[in-house]
Length: 325
Ligand code: SF4
Image 1 (cartoon, rainbow, N blue to C red):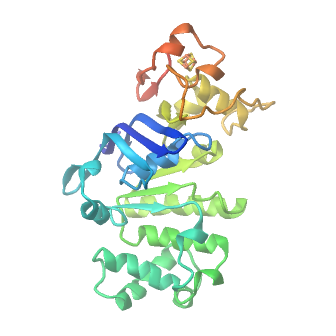
Image 2 (cartoon, protein in one colour):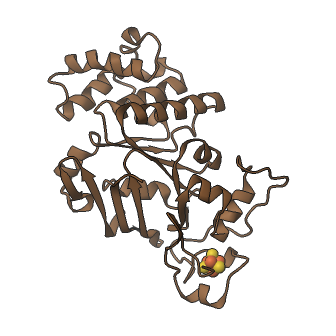
Image 3 (cartoon, helix red, strand yellow):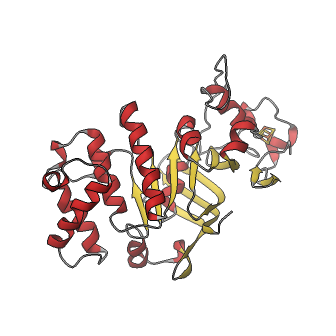
């Protein structure tokens, strides 16, 4: 396995709301390796998007990063991204670590042409000397994200493009500065199925072309099986299990992962019947003590209510947080 590019340790984010403190993610730890596609997977509200945003301090009020570290190993050395000031982190965000967000409609400004928007991101990070030079480069970027006739499309406003084309432009803005890490947060959710497959293929091609690392946030296990190398399964703000795609799909260990795989058509095995996991996702203002999955877990024991299970390595590269192991 290659070297880690990111080492995330005990990342914890709370949201201070009128209703109480929402413990959105607690002590989340994982490594991301250079050149891989690492998927963060789980149901809506499990904390995967909060985790991805916290990596570059993109947490807005009333949220706060309470503790943890995110060590980024770049060509210039290693740095804890959570210790950087606003100016320093802005320098890295968008250039070395870029995001592709879920909804292309809200990621693009309707008042500016797509060429201008790509050029602006390059100018801010000093990749081009002027917007004019950036717009010339934007033509090549639109070509690399497979937009037909990029010379004329560069002058288009977002409303003149289809949903799939807009998401290609958003990917273009993401890769414009040749980032080392591309964080794609549900990049295909707003798109129809055929366009989804094209966008995922495009992200994977760009990862190889630019020698980048991709962190893919998704609730879709089919997408994970198709595109990821390794997977972290999240439940209620905690990591339940980490492993290679093969380990997770063929030999899931955590009862939640097993339940998730039974609840969706598993692309690696033939399942006759789909079973939903009984119960609901807990309220994160008052999460269950011990293992947060214990009220829904068919294997829950006395210890599960009291003691938080630690993430343990059970086989090479396969980690699980469960008292059964
Ligand atoms: Fe179930 Fe206990 Fe394992 Fe949690 S720690 S998943 S409750 S067996």
